[in-house]
Image (cartoon, rainbow, N blue to C red; front, side, top):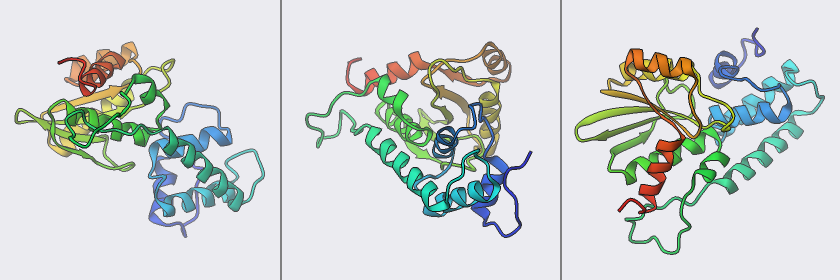
Length: 228
């Protein structure tokens, strides 16, 4: 069922119409819908925020009467909270790094989806990957981070979930498609959580690597210089 409509919408509003409910598994409360928007779209893009507010109010997606102005205020408040939660990431080899608190897996748990992509990118750089690029916050064709190591090209699908929620085989399928789209050698799904049996079975079948919470913690230890 489409919750966005109207042929006067901008391309970004149409992107919301076509993709917004992908992987949305929570109760459709205002807070959850805003969080889903922030985790899956370019929430720092003013036009995306404007489109998001417009289609929610016009299509009455939430069982709560509120104005577009009030919704924009709530979105900005959530963005401020997310920005505060972002860790100050500096590589241990950065000569300007002084008295930086070590990263932890619990910081990853507090990030939104977009910030987790940036978090993963910094961990990969610290682990010796080069040409590390965050592809974008939406419309990324299943690939969130591109990287190269030892002449092997990788594409990562990054999933920041609550640890009581496991990543399903949909993410594996996305990573598999990203390998073809970005012409990489290896596809990897990386998460701060764990995987369902179905995800592990599919990944084994089609050759996608799965990095779970334990692998992320190893990358964090490396970033902090604890594996030297």
